[in-house]
Length: 490
Image (tube, rainbow, N blue to C red):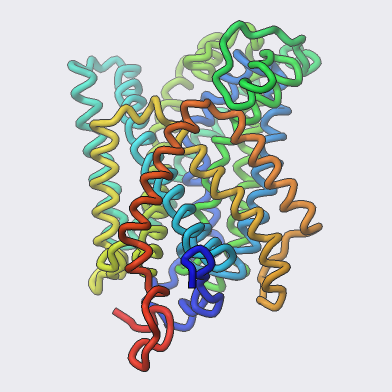
């Protein structure tokens, strides 16, 4: 059978739950999944993105931008919820695509997820080091040779968090609970203290008259319609595209499905609840940010910190710094966990070396692949200008979102008999809207990002043709010793 048409049978994708394929131990409960989602969605950006977009793109209308981005993310989340409830496996969008569209497309999505998660871990680690140095400096401590110190901190944080993930999921989960609780306290302090200084006059009418941009078109959309305007409705929607990056992360909750108790029902609830909570928190911070200072006086470099300084509450700057450091720490931790599970699934299917799917008997985690991921993240963060290429994280994520939205529609037609723990309401309308919203966000990315993404995918396809196509378990003839896909344990 052609590799384009070769699909993973649903019974074998879900056979993990009955031990048909070597799998991971159940660990997560519904509350843990919410913490996992908040761990990755609420990072340092919560203290800056509202101010940046208000100052440069949307004005007070940035609050509407947060709502628009939240709705677009919720549509994608509903699609993930249905497929996760049908196929509760650690492969997430990769496995969904394998079952619905076939092996080549599964590889493409898996390759996009590698780009998303691996690059994100490196990007966030580099940002974490910069914020950590800034936080220490804010306390009056002089840091000599900042660049060298940041490089060292990148190494330390990635080694530490990779070790935590490799040593056991329970250790990582406990650490995540502690850090998420602490950063939510910091965010709560920002909201409560900031509310006391909100001036309703700063909200205006939420709409700022548009201003033309003089820059040359840099996005795909800009090539066809011109680069558009700052502020006005165009600015509000443009800000929504940038803000959607803040909500990215709920999809990583889906990679924990194989390790979740009663996954068909718990995973959809965990994803949706974490996204809703994150959206409410982001909106609350945005309201405080815009309400404290007029958008014309917001510092795009350190918006929330400068706002508190403007109202005379300088000590809150330290709270923001601590919250940002904790926020990015949990983001890195969850990204490593998610990347580990995706690569584990791809290795288990034979598309990458199967040795990476080994589960440690001592720690009960895929330790080998975790160490590989940590090493690659260190190399990227130390030797590649990942901060300048951070949009690659977004395009990799959105690419997977598009396939998941389409997958809901196709699976309803091809496999209506499959049991679903959650169903997207108003299908196929909502999945189609999710697909449209995802494509809209993608065309708002830079042309350069698309070019790098095309090169990455071309390289990935070459890797598949050279290795994955021939080593896939589906490519092997079935024998009495191997009656079905991967039916043996380690």
